[in-house]
Length: 135
Image 1 (cartoon, rainbow, N blue to C red):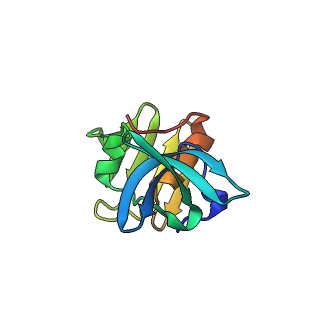
Image 2 (image 1 turned 60 degrees about the vertical axis):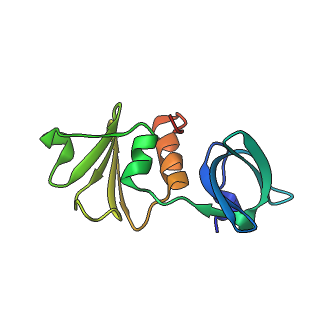
Image 3 (image 1 turned 90 degrees about the horizontal axis):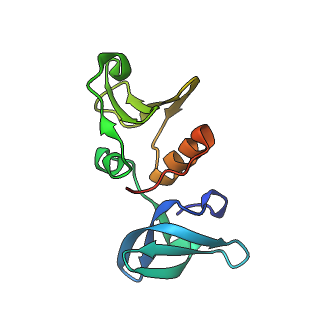
């Protein structure tokens, strides 16, 4: 489950209705009713906050967000790195997606632990002042 305070417009989340889970983007948040309007495909529904779960960060999801793997040894360092414009996501240990280094110009953030798509979106927005969405 995602905490209500973490959910923002534009966040990518999993939304569950009965036994069906759809991945979509939050269109609106009603904090009083504790619900979020999630758009997935051509449909949109209001979901209780308890029915929202985070989407794990994967290499495939990074590519869907417009990041591409970098072969530049300066950017990559000793692990792997994904780049979108001047924003860099480094994984110093290639097989460990829980140790992450975010770089945007002069700002650097070291993260340890599992990172979800909505959290990456929030880091990206706070570092760049731009929304990170699906391409």
